[in-house]
Length: 275
Image (cartoon, rainbow, N blue to C red; front, side, top):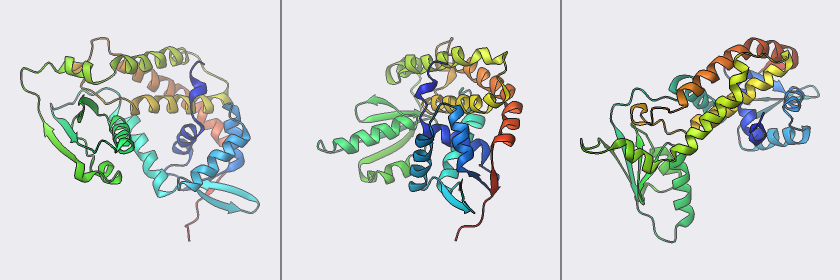
């Protein structure tokens, strides 16, 4: 399936943990993870390295049971996974409930602060903002960026406002000038092409678990890049709704087989309280 190879092991790991560990108060055996990831074409060394790096970044906790090592969630990884869960299942890909509010963020940084400027722009992009002008960024709805700005140490250099567009503003044109709509539309269209065949086909039972992990990982990667612009100001043929329908249909078809496979393949133990 074209495009699957680009999925990062850590992204796939987070999906796996959200699927199998989140909300269950359990830890999963490293050998089980290695087995599942091998079915996804990811080698043992890459999987072990991913587990180790994530533990080092406080995204996983280790729990030894005899000679076996198990991995569970930390507060940090649980927060990341809850956010992904909300983004997929509650926020969704199509914004029909926009109330006309925009969040405007203006910043002025010293010319020499190129790294800080790059970091701020990157984080704003991930938070749904687009560059209205050089130092003025805009996002639909009310977006709380206080934690983001504080983390970057830029609170003194950033001002945030809520605003409504003047009646004469062509919002559709503004959106086209501010965001890369063609790139986002292409991601949705490619997703439909790759996954629509699975609306009617079913894989082998053990393949269903890996296929569903890939489906969710790819979908979350797309919707996280989507600023959720108001659908009434997007092109009539905007592909997000069709892509979301495909995602939900395929996910529902794969889930019974994936659950059966996970019961056979995964060794889980109750998570012990940490010292």
